[in-house]
Length: 185
Image 1: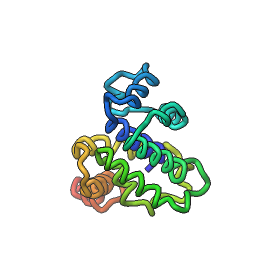
Image 2: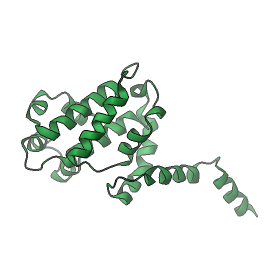
Image 3: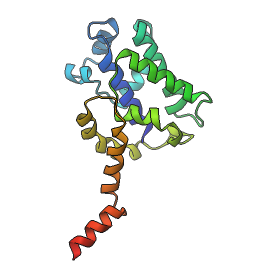
Image 4: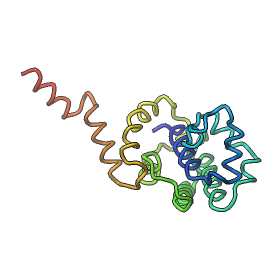
């Protein structure tokens, strides 16, 4: 899973959970005025958009309460776990736990990306941020429909569904070998 896609998924869920009438959300709408209101409400951003907001000192100052806690946790995860560093932070598990706790308190929906982050920390490579974004594009396309199916519910079925998708689509899987054999007969 590409770190960029995880970052964008985390940012999407953060923005979707923000108070629509709050100062911080209104600032995001103003900052990204070229994006449609629908894209902003749904948290659809690009990598440069996410980086721009991550580095924005004004946004950091105007977030308050649970939004501020979640934003700071997001920044810590990006810097100490998903960033382009040669090695993840020693306390990366604590950093991710803080993110998950603050996101849940903010009312963020569970997405496949958040589920993978919470359940499979040890499967991320040590230098997670240096992984090519191309590797994550296939993952992103595979799970777009799956996220719609679960509609933001916190469910462990995400993993099973994704694993079955991988097995079904893998050219070397037993499932596909048997299907090819049946077609040839």
